[in-house]
Image (tube, rainbow, N blue to C red; front, side, top):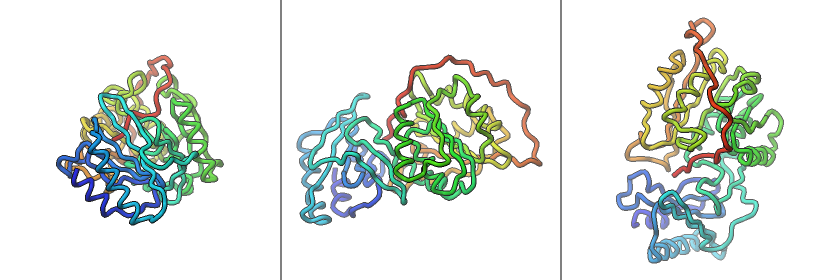
Length: 331
């Protein structure tokens, strides 16, 4: 645990939500099971596996000592979550959690819920993806697929997007997304659709074509989306939803699937889309093996003067499914 303790001893008081220690990246041998996140004014410590009472006492003392240096006399608020064999247990260890709990990121506000569930309402590893969207959507029409709590939409509208269509099967996640827009005074230009994309694409197609599509699905959510079989089905639809010179952010957070998985599937399903770059992840999520980390690939569609591939046969093929959990857990 020494690397975690050393990080706590020198950390600064954050103003934005962010990862502080990423043992999962493998750069700190012996600490692979630990992460520490800041959701101001709350620290969230996560252990992938069981933690002993002695370990928790050691971290608690380190947090208390550093917090007293950073904010003398102010209460320390921290939460511990243990994830083990697909289950999680969350405990408030000290202080309290605001209700509602609103955090910031680069001038945007988001509702989070650190005392329940394995996802807290804002994926911290996607901060650079949101920043890219914020910088490249002036005047654009954007489709946000698997929108979760619609953070990409908030970023797009902050960047001057004309319209964002948010789609997610979870009505609960979409409702949180609407609250996030209200928090930021960005209701105009955003629409919200609790919808199973594999049932029908009609509603989504009618709102297009789009200048930018963001696709950030769960990697494995049984009954709704499994990347190894469903991503290629999704990719086949994308060229016909994009304007000439439109762009696409294709996201995948599955350690067992590398960049080549997405690129090979795209070459099969939509060869006319051109790979541009892989976006960087936040420095705080550095990984000894970048292919295990979050992958965000940028593609674009050719302009009007470029030939398009022959239109494919695109059956919908599946009945409506039960409502999915917003996203598979992120580490």
